[in-house]
Each structure stands twice: as structure tokens, then as C-alpha cells.
Amino acid sequence: ELLVIDDLLSALVGIEGRYISIKRVRGKEGYVVFQIDSSMDLALQVSCDHAEKGRIYLGLANLLLLQELTRRIFPLCEDFVLASQFVESRSHFKTGLVNHALAAALRAFLLDYQAMVAQLEHQFRLGRLSVQGLWFFCQRMMSSLNALAVLIEKAMSNNTSGSATLNLLHSQAKAMAGDSAVRSLLEKMTDCASAAYLRMLERWVYEGVIDDPYGEFFIAENKSLQKESLTQDYDAKYWQQRYSLKDGIPSFLNNVAATILTTGKYLNVMRECGHNVQVSLSENSKLTSFGSNHQYLECIKSAYDFASGELLTLMKDKYDLIGKLRSLKRYLLLDQ
Picture 1 (cartoon, rainbow, N blue to C red):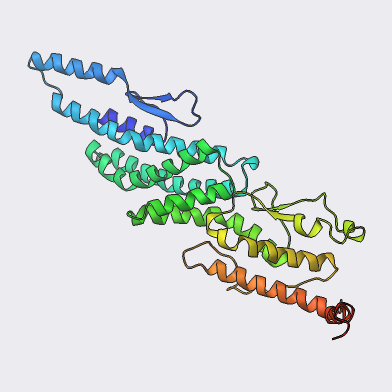
Picture 2 (picture 1 turned 90 degrees about the vertical axis):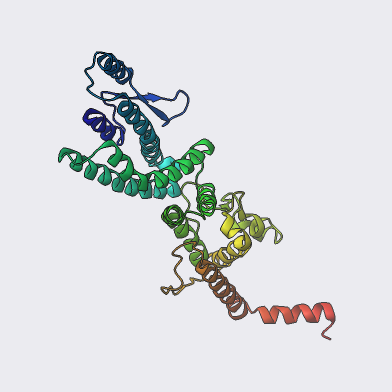
């Protein structure tokens, strides 16, 4: 039993042992299967032979129980390996800022997991850990890591990034409504992954600037369209197509996507006209999370109100909007 516990402690951090082997799943990166080595079956057979001779070193029932408990712990080992592979693969620059942030949050979770394994190993060295005890202490982590593994499998199979990753996180968190601990964990992962996206959103609604190095934001910029085209054609495509909505809008921003687009456009127009807009950011106006309190929606509405008000003031004061409207009235309505 002591050898099996030692092997299990290694397996919990993705390392093979004397009786436990790892088989990689062909065609699926990061997927592995833990197996009990045939040498344990041989030990079982030897035990049976000794039992027939009256020399019982370990009861057959105990060996079967040992194998069963070992197999029950294998899913936790496999989930850890999968999560570790995901963290490594999604830490590359090309995977995008949202995946970088999610990988960082998962890495922090795995550090807590490894600390738990280290504590179990310490108990084992003191002679205070049995296989049953190991199984008991792993229970708390099993549901959490399994939920993350399900999330990771979907993210890897669909190769998600940006908005798609955030949508997946939100849907998985909602699906775990019956398990408050797991739901809280997934919501924490969502908040961490959203941080990078929130910074993009903040720059757009508060500055009218797209800061999107990996193409994750749901607003696209067509740099081929230049404002100079307006001097030749007042009805040019610049205003409508310079900035536009892309597919894959985050589900929690669907209802305000048009407002967000318009807000940034207003700020962009003022900057193009040489009018520097300073948005005073308070603690309440910062986009901190896409949480259930919907504080971010209030921030977006406030940003829209500010941008539209500033643009209207600019048009009235600097470009004499009222005077131009009066001229149109005189011309079209014959000064009625």
C-alpha cells in the first residue's frame, strides 16, 4: 500500500510511478490516461498464490479495494495534466490576451492544488496517510478541477479566444448553479479572463481608441478608410464602415453593443477634429468586472451620455450647428 500511495502522490502531479503508468491519447494534445501497471496485477496473483499456501501477506479484498481507490483518483490526475497543458499552450502570445489571463488564473489555481499535494506528501512521510485518507482529502479538489477540465476541453476543441472564451466561461458558470463552490470558482476565472477585455472596452468607450493587438475585440477598424475621403464625397463610407461590429459579440454585451460602438465613434470623431476629450474617471466609472450587479452597464451608459454631450457641444460651439440649421431652414422652408 505504501508503494501505491507514493505512486499516487506522483501521479497527482503528472508523474509516472512503479505501478502507475501514463498513456497519451493519440490525436488529442494534452489528453492522457492513467493506468494501473500490469505489475500490480502480478502482485495480486502472487498474493493469491500465497493465500493458497496459507501465507497471506495482503488480503485479496484489500488489494481489490486498493486498485479501486487508485482508479477513482485517476480522473483527478488526468484533469491536472490537461489543465497544465492548457496553461502552457495558452500562454503563447498568439492565443490572445483573454486566454493569457485565463491561463494565469488557472496557473494560480494549480499552485494551490500542488500545495495540497505537498501537504499530503508530508503526511505520508510522517506515516499518517492511507489510500482511503488520500481519497478523502482529494474530494474537495475533484469537483473543482473536473469543472475546469470540462471548460478546458471545450475551449481546446473549439480553439476559442477573445469573446468566444468569455462566452464559454459565462455559460459554464451558469451551468453550475447547483454547486456554489464550483460556480464561484468559474466566476473567479471569468473575472480574471475578463480583465484584459475590460481594458480594451475601457479604452474604446473612454478614449475612442481600439487597443486590440490580437483581434479579440468585437469592434473592427478598417484602416483603409481615411477621413480625407470626405473632402471628395460627403456621403463616403468612412463614418459607417471605419468602425463596425464583428461577429462573436460577448453574450453579456449583446444588448449594448450598438451603444458601445457609437460611444467610441463619437470620441473618435472629436479626436479626428482636433478636440481632445478628457474623460474624468472615478472609482465608480471604472469597468472592474462583468458581474451580476451589471455595474458595467451603468458605466457604458454614462460614457455614452458624456460622449454624445461633448460631441453636441463641439458641434454647437465650434462648428456653429445652430447657425447651419438656420441656414437650411431659410433655404428649404423659405424662412418660414
